[in-house]
Length: 68
Image 1 (cartoon, rainbow, N blue to C red):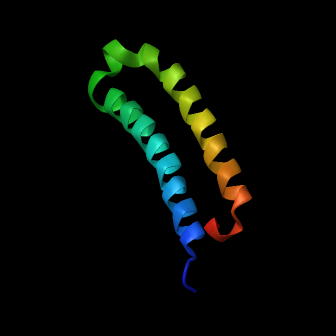
Image 2 (cartoon, helix red, strand yellow):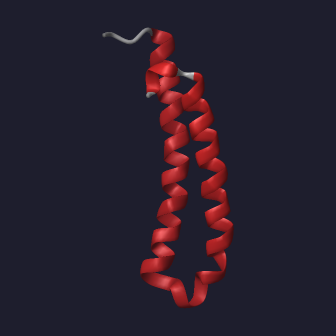
């Protein structure tokens, strides 16, 4: 099934949401791998940020059935 231009734009927007979550998850990963002893205090803030971003991702996905 070919995507319409509107669906392609929605997929592009969805990719942006996912990229934001992945960036924050990467920050968490870097702290755990490299600087846990000095940067551990950033983990709660970053975890909350992931939770908020994932809520946005899931809400966007729920609004666009073809993303499932």
